[in-house]
Length: 192
Ligand code: B4P
Image (cartoon, rainbow, N blue to C red; front, side, top):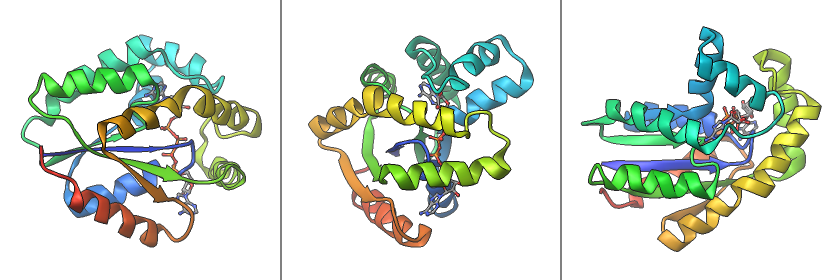
């Protein structure tokens, strides 16, 4: 089994490249952003709480996210691999993911650190905002999301560097070229 963490700033292409990974490797996909947006659309209690954080460009609390993912992980039994998209987003989430996977006899095989400069991130998210209808794809919230990423999410890179599983991926260029680098990193990662 290969557990893949796809990591990067908002708009770095995590969702886009996850679709390519699913098409090629048939891995199970957990996008915490997608799960939260589904909860919001269904008007659940979790969705109501999550919306207030997301619209402010803030992270939903670690406790809510970790409990949510621990439950979702039950459906990954027997999968060839799992993509964690948008999770972990804090050091505490990275530690919790290791515990969750270790108790199931596995671990993260590779962390793909997709690197994109800030002006390009802003451009992409503003473009997406024209069609996505997402309440967080506007200039004010995008600026807050990037600040949150720089302050709270970048320490996750150190976690995986220490684990020896972080692979830097140049995230600017054609989607196919970026995916070629990602495939190489996944193919080189050890099955766990
Ligand atoms: P997410 O849904 O994870 O969203 P994201 O980071 O904005 O998007 P992503 O990087 O997937 O970008 P995409 O591929 O679409 O999170 C939303 C919110 O949920 C967070 O802000 C937070 O509040 C909350 N949340 C989620 N997970 C959480 C957690 N673990 N803990 C706490 N809170 C959490 O790409 C963007 C655009 O770029 C697309 O339009 C795409 O077409 C384009 N694009 C992609 N690759 C390109 C390329 N190579 N060239 C040009 N354009 C490209």
